[in-house]
Image (tube, rainbow over all chains, first blue to last red):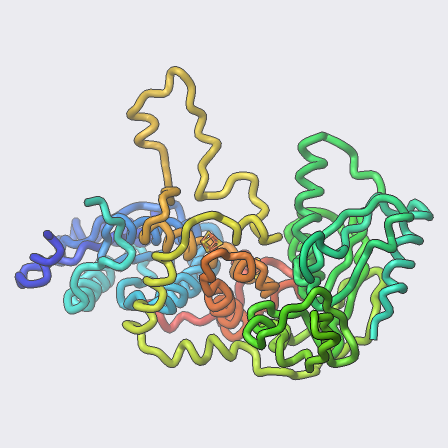
Length: 148
Length: 341
Ligand code: SF4
Ligand code: SF4
Ligand code: FES
């Protein structure tokens, strides 16, 4: 149905769920906004207390609900408000990424970045790149729940 | 080689001297060749215990059951509980202690070295066309009792893959141990099946797993048999959502359900991905989940993938030491981060 249509028409717009740490990346995305930096509107931001609080369950759930890509973005190493949350996130997310890749889900559907509150420009670049990398992959159907 | 009588004597002594309140071990099953788990509480029962190539069950599961039972009945544990443990079982016990499920002094580990062998893979035996009523260890061989008489086979021909690949076939954590430490015996290269599988490209891998996940009937046998799946409430169940007469349909519809219980592909995948994540750094490769799966889902591949990742990327070995932190609750400064922008 709509998925097939999206594949044949060229106006497929990837949908991204972005889990943003409230201390950095979320503020970074705000900065991109108030600085009036133009970037694609494909990402739905979800503010989380820390990148370390992102459970693999969130990622799987987003993909299950039809996200084409998932981004987890946190503070730079050394800058986590909770000291080590982003170190833990780095490890956990490496594992999720490897696992999804192992069962054959395109690894490019999943991304992590460090974006500080001052890096509005970097945030917009991360989203731009992600959208461009997702486009050739087409809609994500592997993990999506069949609600028909 | 281990003398079964030594194991029985150890159990008998412990119970007779009132050092433990029970011994978890194996006895002859009531049908066929396979041993079955048993809990004995009386020294006179010690002669029921067996030790043979069909002792594949990971008995650490029953330590978890015991703990749950104690919590449920609010009983004081009192004396420790003894358990017969192979190398993998002992590692499972260590993981449970790492996670403070119980304390070291609450468990008495009767370690059993696998020496030059390990446990049987029933599928391999069946494919050799052998139907046996009994199995026994004999050096590096297994001896089966069949209708045609005794049949001797080199253990490595019918051993479980995980035993062939086992790096430490010895329960390092123990109170007493039977058999020699043959760590370093190399019977097969670890992660062999995983390596073979990874030669396929992503599209082929998906076709393979899609089929596997479609077949899962969500009986949860894999979860029930795993000593690491000890949560009172699994993320799959969400039983703590209280439904009362006042609960509105909207509340019921809006409660968080990470995974539906229906056995459809998307939910099955989410279940198995979540399970693999929850077992990363904890799974001891006892392969019980794959053995009990009624539809033969290759769960070991998934678990092995995580195990090798933990080992190669983070230098982590599950069940190596009681004091070690959990894989996902620790980090190293040089953890891989090439994938991060
Ligand atoms: S993988 Fe096998 S054992 Fe586990 S729930 Fe599915 S069918 Fe049952
Ligand atoms: S996941 Fe399977 S192999 Fe790993 S500890 Fe649990 S039952 Fe054993
Ligand atoms: S507070 Fe931003 S990653 Fe931990």
